[in-house]
Length: 443
Ligand code: AMO
Image (cartoon, rainbow, N blue to C red; front, top):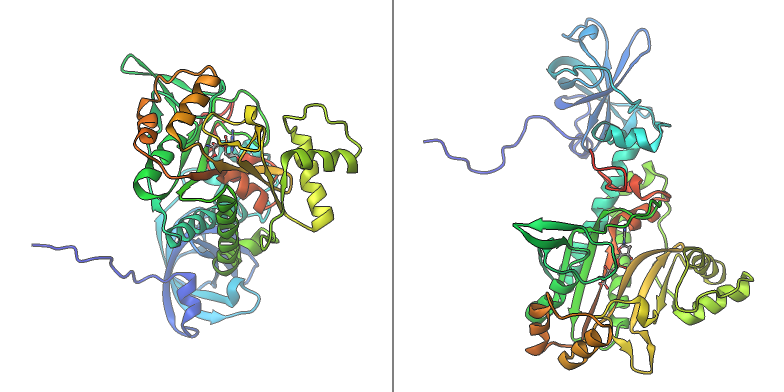
């Protein structure tokens, strides 16, 4: 009988391993995709793309088994050769090829110049050939950074005693209100795709006290902008036994600090590839909504048209104001107007026109919404009634409160927006693997 006893140690090495031990002068085996072939006449450089970077291999006729003509860009290969130090090569090492085994060959020519440092290709072309364009080193690095953000979120919240949950994305009812719901037919019953895990994460506070989720959410927004997707990844958490919504902002500040450190330590290569300067989250200013509006109206000579809403341009100006006045990359805008917040938001006991909630702006773009929620059953039902909403579809949610809930609050962070701002892109599609927007349902 054959038994599987765990992960097999491969006989091929990754770049980190080639660097970690002093293997120079020895024979090693690696695998990878041929990213580029640069023919210099007497020698040919075969650049391998591996999961942790590029490896320069040197082909000299008569020293290697495979005829150069058999090697093509986009073939995947296994290469054996002598490892040598060379300061001019990426990572300071190169492999002098002795044996090449071709594992697979491409069936047609590469549609995009993926081996170029910057592809100089339109966003549309990059999205049309997504699985190919992402093989470009800079494109790939964006999503390693995105991985780092999610990893930071997870690691940090585990350390803070949160439980990771997974809630359904199809339901009878969603929480955020508005007209942006994808409706579907669920075995002849009307159903919706969830706009957020809001109702479920609150219900789970009654079970675990502190929960988080990273997952897809759906918004049937019909506008075509650089910061909206119809499906995006939401980083959500919800925590009980808070004293005020400031506890939520403090937790988010801690998450950002932790994640920026993680990126600095573990994603230095990608930060260098993308030429990213990380923002400062050591202290983040917090300003009430009404005051933020006043400040930018005064400084930039603007008229306040609607005191209960923030226009995108005002958001950008708030970002600019706090950069200029406090050198701040982030700013919390607090106490959003009640009529701009969903029913679950807790109103400010001192002024019911506002809520105990906040947005986090990063260089003038909203990347987070959060706040304290209503935890009292009677108060919650009163607010639902006052909004002219029906309790239909909210029965289970309300039951949670009927049986007791602690004071609590939480937030939702748009992953693609945060990634976009962090790496200095200006279109959210650049930091979405497979964007869903008004015109794009594929790939
Ligand atoms: P909200 O609807 O403000 O709040 O969403 C939270 C964050 O998600 C991001 N975001 C988007 N990203 C891309 N495309 C979109 N169409 C889009 N819409 C929103 C933004 C935003 O700040 N339940 C609350 C959160 C909470 O209070 O816990 C909610 O979903 O970065």
